[in-house]
Image 1 (tube, helix red, strand yellow):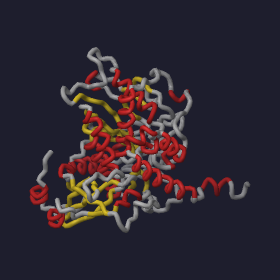
Image 2 (cartoon, rainbow, N blue to C red):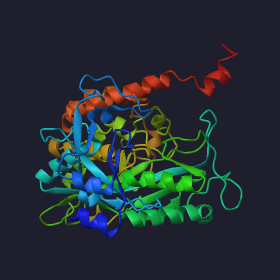
Image 3 (spheres, rainbow, N blue to C red):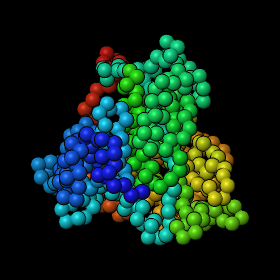
Image 4 (cartoon, rainbow, N blue to C red):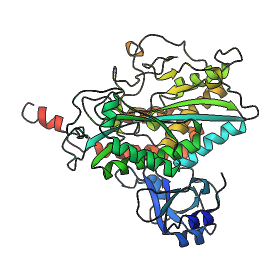
Amino acid sequence: MSVDLKSWISERRITEVECMVSDHAGIPRGKILPAAKFLDGIGERGLRLPEAIFGQDVTGSYIEEKDLDPRRSDIFLAPQADTIRMVPWYKEPTAQIINDAYYQDGRPVDISPRMVLKKILQLYADKGWRPVVAPELEFFLVKVNPDPDYPLVPPIGRSGRPETARQAFGIDAVNEFDPLFEDIYDYCEAQEIDIDTLSHESGAAQMEINFNHGDALDLADQTFLFKRTVRQAALDHGVYATFMAKPMQDEPGSAMHVHQSLYDVTNGRNLFANEDGSHSEDFLHFIGGLQKYLPAALPFLAPYVNSYRRLIPDSDAPINMHWGVDNRTTGLRVPISKPNERRVENRVAGADVNPYLAMAASLACGYLGLEERIEPSAPIDTSAYALAAKLPRHLEDALLRLNRAKPLKEIMGQRFVDVFTSVKLAESAAYQKVISAWEREYLLLNV
């Protein structure tokens, strides 16, 4: 889609433009400009940010890395015209636009999440392949909680009562929050975020919204904006929306399942199925790559200490990398489908991921499987929870495995992995300083 930014902004009488990039946590960072100044600066390298924004952890602190000093090393933002959208919750006509990041010599910023995904997609393009993805994103609605020392609880709906029992796929349970979801759908329509079905998940006030399948970069952009949209709509209705992987102790976690398929650019054929409808060799090798490399890529799919509270047995989340046809206990599920819709669902990623990095990592693992012709294990039709847990159980264990996986580090980018690792270690160190309620409850007077 080719967009003339000057005409687009003029027709909608835009007064301000939010220019944003995604940091490693998926937090929008950037600058807000008057529309006229934004248009004057296009092509003039007028929009600059310190490269160190990609070295911030989720608390906003900068990591100590010699090349990432917030006082220097500016990068240039290049607005991507096809990503411009209205910000529908403002009274004044305001636009938002996603940017790519470049160094002064024109090189892509290798530690920018969006540029990492574009790099992986270029590897596919060079082979004449086109990945197609469809995310499914879960989240909880919770009562406003200004004190982080208190546990989260479900909010009160239209009935005047919070959910006290799980209502998986409950229609009336979703309708408790009809005004909120009407706003979410309206906001998404205004932003051309292509969401599909809404359903109630198994947790109390836990919801899932599915996206229609499409281009991986476009879907990552949409997911990035969608999370911001849901949080904003929830605030407008006096509740929080959270994409934490495990926000409540006795409830299931939230995931971002990603369906992935692969098409031949020249003829549009799904490369994952043979003419007779059977699984192709490419499909099996793609799964083999996911099985081999996703455990090492786990920091991109489970990026916080909280993420690993979700990946436990019998919790609607995988604990290993087995695969099976329509088997929801496995890390890799193959939905029953027509040959031209053959796909594999990566069920490992939590809802707390940066969508650019989660998609980049999953597609990178599949690409390595295709390149190395990795054979997968046999599919299973029993519960994967009865088999050994193979995924790392803690963030620091996962980071160790990532940094030992040389092919994965090379394809994602050595410097990017180094900076990402430093960010995650800084977050883990900050967490280790926190004394939890459990420790005060059971250790204070007993040990």
